[in-house]
Image (cartoon, rainbow, N blue to C red):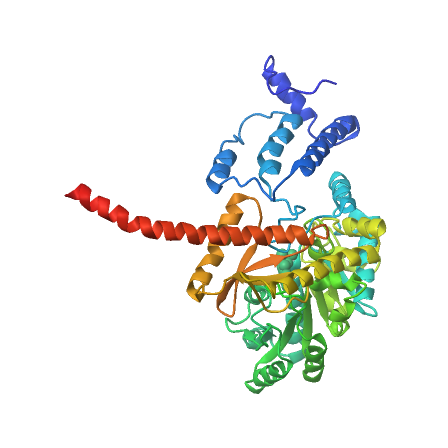
Amino acid sequence: MGRPQPDDTTAPAQEAERLEDAALLRADTAERYEEIVTDVVDRIAARLRRTSAPSSGASHRDLQALVDAVDLDASGIGEAAALSEADDLYAQHAVWFHHPFYAAHLNCPVAISAVAAESMMAAINTSVDTYDQSTVATLMERRLIAWTCERLGFAAGDGVFTSGGTQSNLQALFLAREGAIAATGRDRSAVLPRLRVLTSAESHFSVARSALLLGLADDAVVPVATDGDGRVLADALREAVADVRASGDVPMAVVATAGTTDRGVIDPLVAMADACDDADVWLHVDAAYGGGLLVSPTRRHLLDGIERARSVTVDFHKTFFQPVSSSALLVQEPADLATVAWHADYLNPASEAASEPNQVDRSLQTTRRFDALKLWTTLRAVGADGLGRMVDTVCDLAARVRERLDDDGDLRPIGRTDLSTVLFRYQPAGLDDATADRLVPHVRRVLFESGRAMVARTVIDGRPCLKLTLLNPDATDSDIDGVLGLVRATARGVLAGERLAGRAAPDAEASAEETAR
Ligand SMILES: *Cc1c(COP(=O)(O)O)cnc(C)c1O
């Protein structure tokens, strides 16, 4: 079977028919599928072998031009050409998280088993909504939910895979909202404006946005004070809950963060669980980042208290080395999850609710990817302890980097490192705060634009700072030294450039005056 060539224009109508005829995966296209996918795998493997930086460094403007140049209304060019084009356009300019000089956000290099599983599930295209569409896939997802609950210490928990921590948090707060309204025994419309969510300013923005999406009042999110490292002060939480009650409002949920996105610190889970128990408030633990500690051989204790949460978010696509997307929402009480159930006669009629395990009854999504297959194959391939050692490796690396910064003349560390985040500023002795502040976004941008290394920036206690999020177990100390070396060199380069420009400016003015004369 000859492959259609893009320049084969002898019989355009016939050619178009041939392309369409071969477009879908089925018995007589299996061979073609094998060829095309093998081709893509070969291309990616070749790129992995030769990728020497996190990205190509192509500018936004150049990339926009490349994207705009593709005619999406043109007639088909065939799979081989389309995938080759995608390789040139996308793979060529993608940001590669496996490169040890990528240290910016919460992105991880991915487990090979999971990538292979991803292509398996894409080809089969299972949707884990009703049992009659997914059969064994539903049972595998449910096994993994049970496994995660066991790791959490939920005796009889339940849960569902989601698209990410944002969705897991939204669903958790939705369940908490319904629970709180039901508990008051009053009208939804009367209670809704009175519901309050207590959390620190360090919690993920999806908490505040969920409150908005859930129709809560504009001031529904009550900020709870933190210690100098950005962790909730349990006494302040107790007071805040009491204040909410005293003003006639309803504490709908407390959100603790196990691994804040910005600093990677863990709220005091046990003390917060005590406060929530005493006040009878729903505790949600957002462990999107810290969830990997569930398998850590040495750091599991950092999550002590998580077993007392009513709901938990875990992002497998962060600290379990899974390809995007893979997350789960877990609940302590299976009945809590029932709130989302919605029955449709064509899909999951209420009359048959007990007879088949329909995951759609637990999800905000209907059609939903079988992401669980990726975690399943990774656990089988590497083992839970193996995954946990990978988590430990990145935390150990971060701890060493953080320690070395204590003695660094140019880079000053900020805050503590519980997980794998290291915050710092370029500020050698004698450099004033304002200049150090100004350098932060500048250095990040120059590095980003070079494509050679990627770090993030944020603001901690009003001070801009740079951030390393280390999630690559293959990155070595010398790799990170290399990244920090580039940060130093970039900062010096920026300062030197500014000094030059500072001198150039009066000269330029002088020559402009001369020209005018
Ligand atoms: C990343 C993160 C989220 C959001 O998760 P997504 O998977 O990006 O939607 C929520 N909470 C915390 C603490 C996170 O770090």
